[in-house]
Length: 126
Image 1 (cartoon, rainbow, N blue to C red):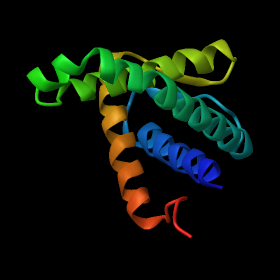
Image 2: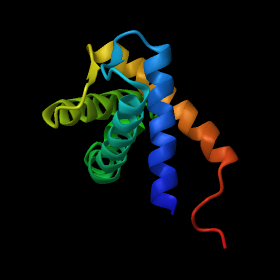
Image 3: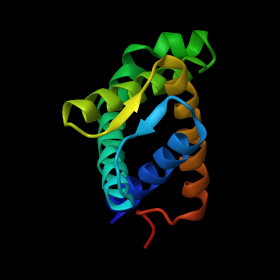
Image 4: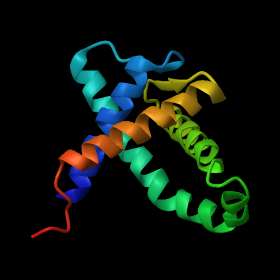
């Protein structure tokens, strides 16, 4: 159940990024297609964050310390760009026009995910 909630949170956060940031686009025609694209891209984004982000944090630990964690903003932007690349490889109409839209989009995704995490229950609670 927590995986489904996580995918939904990612989908809503990605919707907010598309809505707020010029340069992040979903090219689906109908609302139903857009919802499906957001859900699939949300799952891809969750998978990318679950698999690649811990590796990057471990390998780049010194950079996190030297930049007082600010490198995390760049890493999150690159992970969002990787998500867009995987989505385009799967023929999903999700695109990011460059680094700066990905940078600002990653900030929006992080803030929205954090806010939704405050409101939604955790999967570990019984």
